[in-house]
Length: 351
Ligand code: SF4
Image (cartoon, rainbow, N blue to C red; front, side, top):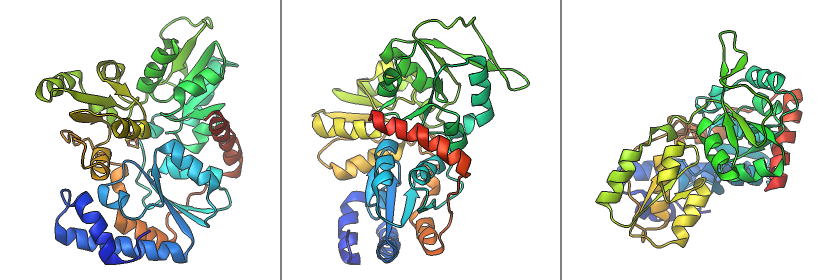
């Protein structure tokens, strides 16, 4: 961690000077310096998702990563306070793994379209319709939904989690695109239930517990649903040799058309290990900036500006306020905590 503000500015300038002006850089570095001082005094740890804005990503986190890596860090930290620079379901996961610690989220508006696409009642309805079928829940959900699930997964381990169950049929919620992408990899047949007017689940097809099926939900990430195959074709024509990487929250048409599919950390590892004339990342746009900052030798195309409005709620300003005032504290009902934690720890055991 950098103690001296001049050194912090020196570190940040080459990484983020293309995204903000020098005056802004000085002002942001001052806030980052304040946060780093206070973080030490209060014995806090800052976890930041790969989608954080470049100035935050490069200045205050103790750990950066995807949901799975940050869940693991949250599970092993010895600090008293965890500040989660990410969205609410991530901070909830940190709280589930650290029930006795103070877990703070700098903005309560940092939600997620996937997490908001499904309720605990919806899951109960699915379980009633398909008794005995195990429920795999993507980590991008709230704690009450996780509490209704058998096991969680992240984009990094979803296929491994599905395969670990050795079940003929599973319920996979709530990301429709990820479910279809995982079904392709694990060779499963997809069944799409629908909600009827009174919010109970009905099916498009007759369900007779066929072998190797995934019953899925229709949630979508509002960022990853905005990529199109035409744009991929255009990029390939314009940038010869470009390697295109996509997040599994993108549609199956997109994941079929690209060169590599993986979660955010897999994408970073891919870029680090391969040589290509250009890289195009079909994911939240801050990540391309963050990888480009870390690897100035790589030609990372920045032709999309698909910014997640929820991740964008987290700033250096509200992170400082969060640390100063202990806002906003994540609380989860004890009964929900216990059941949701079980689903997460099962996932962590799979790897
Ligand atoms: S990028 Fe998509 S999945 Fe991630 S927090 Fe934003 S809306 Fe949710």
